[in-house]
Image 1 (cartoon, rainbow, N blue to C red):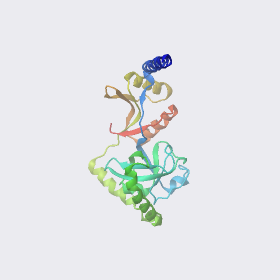
Image 2 (image 1 turned 180 degrees about the horizontal axis):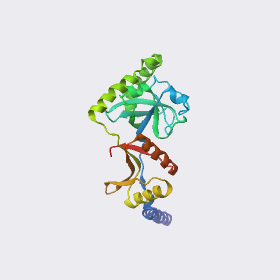
Image 3 (image 1 turned 135 degrees about the horizontal axis):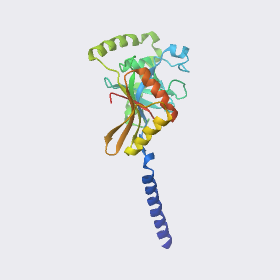
Image 4 (image 1 turned 180 degrees about the vertical axis):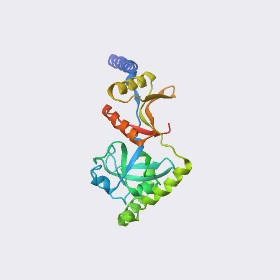
Amino acid sequence: MNFKKIVLIISIFFLHACNQFDQNNKSLAYISDQKYSNTGFALIYDDQLKKGKKISKKIDNRSLLIFHNKIKKNSFVKITNPVNNKSIIAEVISNNVKFSSFYNSVITQRIAEEISLDPKEPYVDLILISKNSTFVAKKAKTFDEEKNVAEKAPVDGITIDNLGKEKDKKVKVKKHKFLYSIKIADFYYKDSAENMVNRIKEETNIKKSVIKKLSKTKYRVLLGPFNDIKKLEKSFNEIKVLNFENIEILKNV
């Protein structure tokens, strides 16, 4: 009995100590996603990218396959075009292909066509889906059938150029404006967000950072906004030296 009491007292003391540690180190606390998701630009594959050494491996443009640097091979992802909410299930065929980290994935021209993606502004939502989920289970058969059909189809059967022309017309009508920000991280405490902003200023050449209050316990650190994709990519590459876990690109925030 005495031994049980001693164990109980030690456990209570340990939990209290951990709680105190968390409170004293609140500047290090940040919110992390429970499952991987990323919003940003996808790189639409083209053989010229391989020839120009902007990507280290080829991919079949008729397939529903993608390259990704963080998600393991043979995982399924849902790719959505936020402009029209069209989505498709794709499979990660490799995670060791070299390409610019500015892009959250490399997708095929077929995937871009399926979700009516604008080649000049290939902005997508990408979410990792568990193989055990009912969503993937329902799509698995369709995915395999589509993949088999695609492998037999001629490469020139993909009309991404026509899609681009059609999309250009829609963009002109809607008077779309290019405006994106880089999301660094979400924090529980405002001083944590301020510490991150100071770190960015001290360790990089980036000075254009802001803190956006989303709620009483959620503060978001953003870079931007940027109205030019080249400036956006330049800042994205500069921030890489800080080795953040999952940088995202957000539209019109």
